[in-house]
Image (cartoon, rainbow, N blue to C red):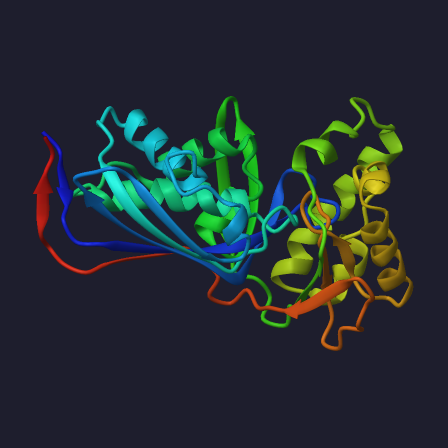
Amino acid sequence: MVDFVSHPVTVCVPASSANLGAGFDSMGLALALYDHVRARVVDGPTAVRVSGESAQQLPRDESHLIVRSMRAAFAAAGIDAPDVELECRNEIPHARGLGSSSAAIVAGILIADALVDGHMMDESEILALASQLEGHPDNVAPCLLGGFTVAWMDGSRARAVTREPAASLSPVVYIPDHYGLTEQARAVMPELVALSDAVYNLSRAALGVLAFTHDTDLLFDATDDRLHQRHRAPTMPESVQLVKRLRRDSIPAMVSGAGPSVLAFTQDPPSQQHFRARTLNVGAAACQIRDTGPQVLPST
């Protein structure tokens, strides 16, 4: 029989930016912009309260992505899922290329794990399940591990490493008012690419590991891309044009994830029409779990 803790648990999960220009589907960076989720086991039914970003568009029942991810975690562990009461305070803009779905998935799995007395999953299992639910590990890795991450698939299992970002990184996110759809952005990607483009991105992605962790003077070259942004331009023309304008001014800039937000690195961000700029940091941007007591509630 499994025991559930009776006290509330709280999880804070960061936003993330994937791809980072050349590192398509492999590199990511956690950003200090958090969704906060508080949960406790109840007799039922499951209820969800949401405030903050996109609060009016999100469901308040078991169809919420956090609840679905919790239930997937319990199912993976062979545990009957309890009913829960969730309170969500969102800071991460939804459908903007800043990892909101990955944050919800990671939050759901971590909440499920924290509600079980003694826990039920280790970090590698959490990463594997989160990647399976999201479809790829490039956003869930920085959300779970924090910092600068490189993620890859080892057969059917996701793996990732994290490194401390360079202290001089100065990320700025340009967020448009309109939404973007990851499915649409991925659908326009070609099945085959030119060998010269593949080599171009391989060299820039390798350079990116040095640029994001040690030498930010390399960021401009390291974030250039020939694999995905130009193919996605018709789905987010304003974002791609913003990337081009910033890069013409020698500012390292790229589409954030599947867009339409743009990530740039500059100490003096220029204002841009149709985008709101947010200066963030990456120093402490890892998921945080907090509970409030030792009590346990026996499962039925």
